[in-house]
Image (tube, rainbow, N blue to C red; front, top):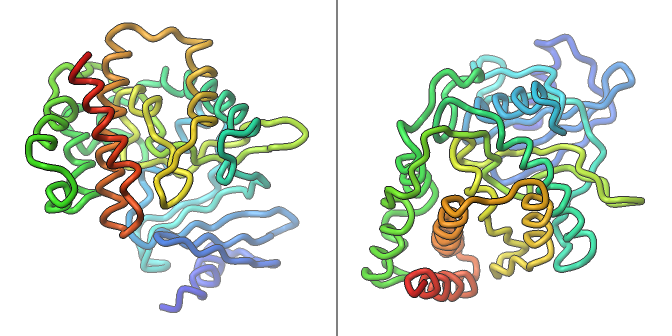
Length: 302
C-alpha cells in the first residue's frame, strides 16, 4: 500500500473528511497533520512497532492530569492499513532540540523535571513495556531483565567488543544490568526517551505535553533522571537541559542514598548503550565513548 494513502484509508474507515493535510516523515513513523470539522489532528503511523506502549502512556498521563496528548482513536489490528496507528488532537508546540546550554534549555529542563516528579509517583504494575493498552501484561519479570531486554533490542550483539575491551564491558554489565543493587520492588511510570515533548518557548517556557515514550516505560524513575540527552550526532549533550531537569526534580523531591547510587549506575548504562547505538548508526560515537570510559573510572574509584 502506498504510504501516501494511509490517511485516506483511515479517513474512509472512520468517516473523516481530512483537509489542509501535511506530512512529516520520520525514520520509524509517519505523522499526518490534518483538519476535520475545524479542528486539527495528528495521525501517527508506526512503521516498525505496535503502539500499545504509546497508548498506555498517553492514557495514564491523562488519567493523572499530567500534560499529554488527547487520544482520539487508535488501531493495532493492521486491517485498515498494514501498520498500527493513533490519532490525537494536534498541539501547536516546539521542542528543546537546538538549544544547548542556553536559558531556554535550562528553563525547559526545570519544567520537565517538575512533571517527571508527578509522573514518577504513578505505579505501573510491571517492568519494561506493556503488552496491552491497559498495562495488564508486561514484557519483563523484573527491572534487571527490562534493562537486559532493552540492550539486546537496541544494539547489535557484536557492537560492544568493537568499541570497548572485554574487561570494560564486564565492569559495565556488573554495575548496570547485572547489578542486583539496582533491583526495585515497585515499578513506576517513566518516559524512557527524554526530552521528547511539545513545549511553548515564548513568552515563557512551558511544557505542553510529554510525547513519544521510549523503549522502557515501567521501572526505576532514576532511569529518566540519569538519561543523557544527545543534541546531535556527535554525541554532545550539553549541560543546560540536564542541569535544569535535575534542579526542577530535586527541588521537589530529595533523592535517597539508594536513589543516588542507582542514578549513577543508570547514567553509566545510558552512556554505554548510546555509545553502541551511535556506532551502529555510523554516527560519531567517540565523544560518548570517552565519557563512558571516564565515568566508569569515577564509579569504580568511588
